[in-house]
Length: 352
Image (cartoon, rainbow, N blue to C red):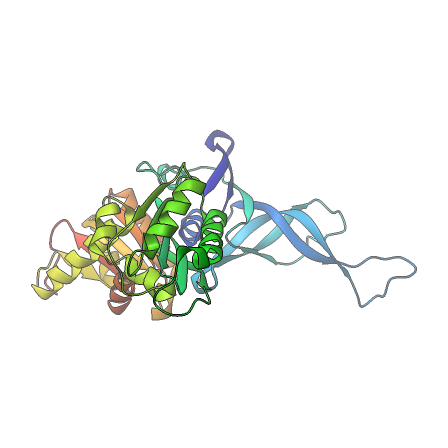
């Protein structure tokens, strides 16, 4: 999340959404009665001699929406906010009735609140900083997969076929393919990203060397052999011991360790664990939650959205940690199998 202005004294924050994690944070920030200022499109009916009464013109306007409700649709990576327009840059935009805006990654907005709570300030400016982003490349001389890992969210950007035949080939014939792969890496990479390459054989080292030459300000690592390439290789790369060592201390490792501990405690009948929203809610109300993780497809389990937001906020208000897990990852699937939310407890509430 890119915060361009945050002035809690004047009740205002301007930001740009960057990722799925940002959508979850924003959903926890938006409350009924807030004012959301953003660009939107509206159909405006023009009353002039040549206009058709049943047609209107779609125009881009800046509106201020008094929030009535917000809903997160993480499967489509968007938030729908409904409310009443109280201000508009085009005077012809009607302010009657309810209006909705869709917020998604890349969207810029300003959120106004009468009072920003301590937790809301912390959500805007997390004390432990931003987790490192990794650009992952699983490559051999026939195929390359390129993806990004931000927090716990994995996104495969593209796959590239080389068109080269056979298992062997000189570097000369591979140069156009190498140049293409490095060029796409340069397009996808952001400042501060660490680039990690894996794949069978030594071909990944050729890509790594060219990447270091083109992007000297980035850390580029070629790790242990990996049997898979392409999109499957990108997903498999995260599970290797070498990547786990590189990513030590990052958000994804913290979530993996949390889920592993949850599974361990459940298998040992340790009561210092909770899963499913009702049980985690009970533990949060008692101040017993040390850390919890929620799968990004939690609503597929029929979980109440407002109830979930309340629980996550309660956990953090009482000093616990909250993590969002990508449901396409192995640990995310494990969380989904336990009702979409799991928690480690400071002390036992009851035996499960």
